[in-house]
Amino acid sequence: MAIIKLKPAFKDYLWGGTRLRDEYGKECDYDKVAESWELSCHKDGPSMVDDYENGGMMTLEDYIARAGRQVLGKNCEKFENFPILIKLIDAKDNLSVQVHPDNEYAMRVEGEYGKTEMWYVVDCDEGAELLYGFKHEISKDEFARRIADNTLLEVTQNVPVHKGDVFFIKSGTLHAIGKGILIAEIQQNSNTTYRIYDYGRVGKDGKPRELHVEKAKDVTRLAPAEQYPDVPAVEKNGAKMKLMAKCEYFTTYKVDIEERAEFEADDSSFVSLLILEGEPFVTDGEPEPTAEEAYNTKKGDSIFVTAGSGKFFVEGKCSLILTRIDEV
Image (cartoon, rainbow, N blue to C red; front, side, top):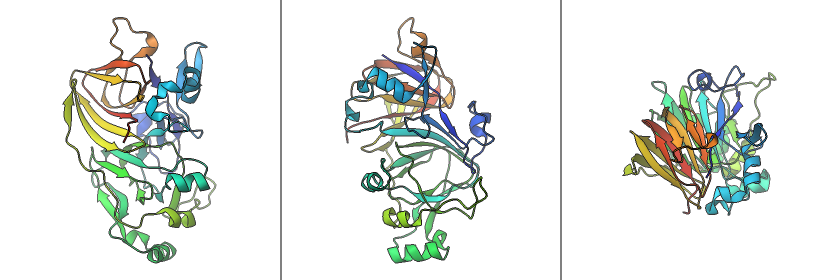
């Protein structure tokens, strides 16, 4: 049995804000805290865990190597690397218009997984919008022309957003988070992004940020986005659970708990918990759980429960995102 609290990696991208530090208590020295990588084995930003044996810290990837890949579960055996990456994203300004490749293209060109992802809108300003696919299908020639003459945004689909909205973003879908939105993102374990349009902004070096137009032309689906169907919430073991997305890479639920809920991490998959609201207690239910397997949590905290751990409990009124890897 292992219930582990993770420490995130941070990114200070130029469009970021300060909510993750100011409201979620993230300990970071950056002026801007654009992203916290809450569950990550990616080389560009690994999550950290307490190393109780040696009194320090180690990466989640090192923990998995020490404990053995069985802690990921049988459904992860098909993945060469850790399968997913979970982030909190604070967009104070608009993100670039971008697209992610599928596995075949990404492995061939970039040497890592492609990127299918989903967004849960944790919070947003009134009137906030995001870009999500196209208004209608367009041709490759029109796509290329509109990129060249700077009219691409005339045919992209802007969607007003509200707290609790969910967006499934299959690889190849054109998208952009708009300003004033706080997102929880569950994605494949990849950091490959192709920018198409960036509002003429410059990076820290004073130069325009790199665009990846030719690669984007190769992989963009030139049609309206394919949204995951809405599924009603169900009551289960003390929790109200709403399936937000299920694909070969991740299964993700929005979970609301009034008092106490029971979950299970069987040998098929690990379980990730990202706390959105409340201050729940996560425990294996034993009368005297060990210090490294029982946690008082707050919003923004991320918990990793190893596969094969069996039953565990979340106690206290809260909302969270639960993610695991299921067969599809």
